[in-house]
Image (cartoon, rainbow, N blue to C red; front, side, top):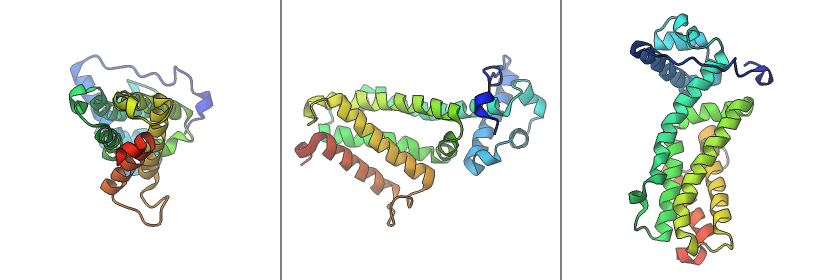
Length: 221
């Protein structure tokens, strides 16, 4: 990997394609990059590997950027865009209308964790590299906060039932705990923190109950 401190904005520049055929080729390159990360992680991510997977000549990439770091971040954004599109569920008022507080919290946790699990192969690669790649860490933090905003928007509809003095602080703390638990599972596997791992459905339900008990207390009974 390049020294992240030496990377400049110019190094990370990607020149977007203007013509339809070029856009299709570039999308194929981005899809190939995501697939490589999912299959082999960052260590497998090279310009040559992307070219081979996308069945394009290197000029198709060098026409857009001159740096592996820029290509990687373009692929990162392409993969993250798929997760972000699913986060729109938190802006869908119809999805949450009429739910009692307990069911609202459980459903919000299930939606949040489900996004991570559906994209676990991609997330595993980018989470593991983020410790050594400050720009990925910065962007990942921004997107996590965006997800947290959506989660809080939904759960705070039940704010009068939250047993803590500051409902928003409690909801955001709850989000941080649930998000961290799901990301650790995605990055390191279900056996990382427990000798008796459970399946995804049980794990998600347990996180939902944890959130309910923390936020709503006796209301959960």
